Structure formats: C-alpha cells, structure tokens
Length: 233
Image (cartoon, rainbow, N blue to C red; front, side):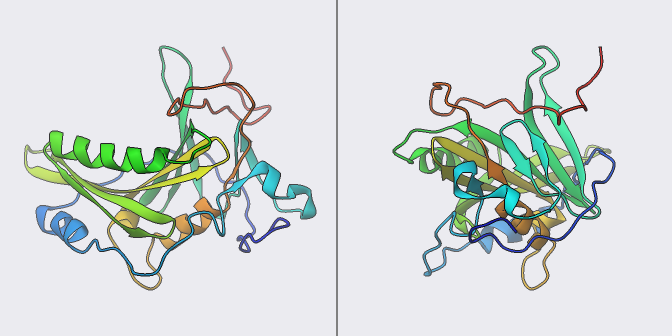
C-alpha cells in the first residue's frame, strides 16, 4: 500500500452507496459473545500496522484508489457499501458506515489529548453505559489492543427479546481517536476466515488527517462528503 508498514490492500472499485441494517441476535448467541471474551497474554501495539496518521504515510507512493471524507481517508474494496450518518438538525456529518454482506463497521473521529489516555476512559464509559441500558459489556483482547464487546437488548418485530451485538475498537493517534464499531455477523463470529477479517484490514488502512483547530478531548470531529459529491439543496 502506501509507503510505510501498511498491509497490502485489496484493489477496489467504488460501489454504490447503500444503507445497512444489522440484524439482532438471540439470547444464546449474545451470551456466547461476552462469555468468550478474554485478554490475550500477547501485548498488541494498537497502531503498529494502522490506522495511520497522514504524516506517517506517503499516499502518493502508489496508485491505489482512495476516498476522502474530510479528515478520514479510506481504501474501498469490491462489494463495499458506504453511507454517511449525520444530524439532520445541524447538518453535521457524524460518522461513516462501511458495509459488506451482512456486517458493518461505523467509523467516528474524535479529538484526543496528547497524553493518549482517552481510549482507556471511553472503554470504561462504554461498559458502564451498557449496564445502565440493561445490557452487558466487557473488555477483551482485539486486533487493535483492548476492545469492548457489547450486547444490548432490543425489541423484535413481534415484541420478542432480541440482542444487538457489537465490538468497539478505539485507537489513538496524534491528537485524534478513531472509533470503529463492528456490527452484524462480523461482531459475533471469530476464528479463521471470520467475516470480521475484511473489516480489520479496512480499519488498518484508514488514514486520519486531523486539522490544527483546538478542540476539547472527546469532541466529535466532523466528516465531509467526498469532493464533488456534496448533497444538493
């Protein structure tokens, strides 16, 4: 890929932007997710192979197609769907949802302190908020260091109790924090050739270009439509 440590990305053609709706799972499946969460003895350096800061890579060192969403630069792959999520009242673009088959990965970018301790605080908050919402979550070892595996109750179409399963990755760079929330089948299945593998590679290849504007740690950094594709009206 680009000129430093990045893994080789799949050459891609951009697909039409489409919506994604992750399917809740049953009680038994949801229980397995958290019960199987365990910390690995091997230390993982969260950004050893990406995501990268813009100053760490040379994007002009190859001819791979990329898409820029303001401060986020992503490398698409065949079959990928992309959808921007925003606040209709403010017009602020808050997150980017990448979808593939029956899974999705939501990306959101936040300001972080130079000390680099925001991720630890947010993981604790996610676990506490899950408990307050009637669900459960716990930290486990993931591909980018500690991750949070979360199960939240939702009502099914006929009033039955279902569960929404997700995995949350939090990776810090120079004054930024990138959050990835994995949903759908990829959040549940693990092992060799798991559906999460394609999203792990996608997340590794994200490049962050944070501006120099002063921001409060934890403040959302707005994304943007690709140049020439801004909504009309």
